[in-house]
Length: 402
Image 1 (tube, helix red, strand yellow):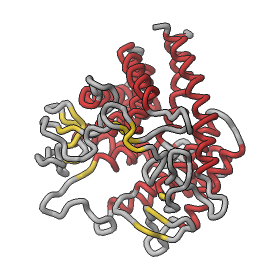
Image 2 (spheres, one colour):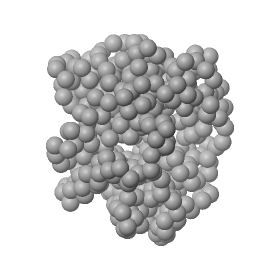
Image 3 (cartoon, helix red, strand yellow):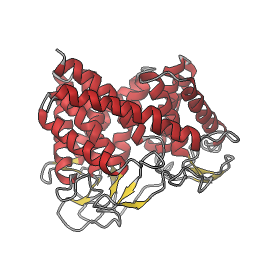
Image 4 (cartoon, helix red, strand yellow):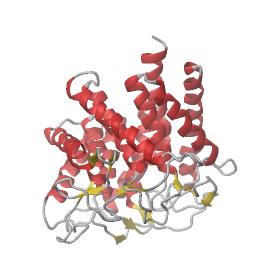
């Protein structure tokens, strides 16, 4: 493989897909010019199927458009999209009775549902941080930090969030542990605070000592508070895409700390171990692509979508393998990137109406063709396209054009 040619060509491909397909798709079909905010429940062509708004995406969308503005192309319409969504969050998505955010609201912002998670808050926080970086308006960095401290209060104060299980089965979850690393690191870029660093360190320690299980060569999604296996169908779940995403969050933190020395090196080695384990569990040797769920003891997975190929694990694999190659220079990871990238581009982009399919059967055939819903919208795909360009630029400088 001609590494420079391979990476340079894919960098341009990612740029084209981002600027000429993905970001315009959501500007054209998602932007709500009447009520503010963004719609995501659109069909294959981009026609609105449901005016219900995902509060996750009122945060995810402005993060992505601000991230693109900061790193790829400083187009004013990206900042306008971001501001539109952040304004909608502040006007409609926060419950005034307790400060928590909703999960779904109506088109005009009336509350529909809250959940026991704080992901809406996390995505809003990273949006405000990235928008602050784009505009230079420190007030949004301060809002992001304030919201982060509220998130910490929500999850650490008994009684605010309903536990997933009753006291008969106490458990802690990988998802909130890993997302807080990314949330804190994004905010740290625009406003430093000791609580951000403490949370990152705490999450890293939990992943290392509780969720990583060498006896299964796996990172588990749920364990006891002591880090022990919960030997049930739900307790044995491995979510390879989620673990691969965690791996690159850790590589990013290792890079920040200097990944060839001290704590940074330790974090890098932990991240690479998670990536290697998760690739082994997730890569489908028969059909290619990252599979949804596995059982750490090899029993059949319970989830009905267990053998499907969703869009987001593939995008996370593309990022993580590039990050691992940057961190190590090991061509093993460049080959893993080629495998993940080739499969992704063979099956996910829609050549007719643009954007990407989200839900595929195991063999890569389309399960349903909608471009968005409450969980899929402008986030994983554009984040991958942005981050991959950034990583390739660094790889070319470090490993290729020395």
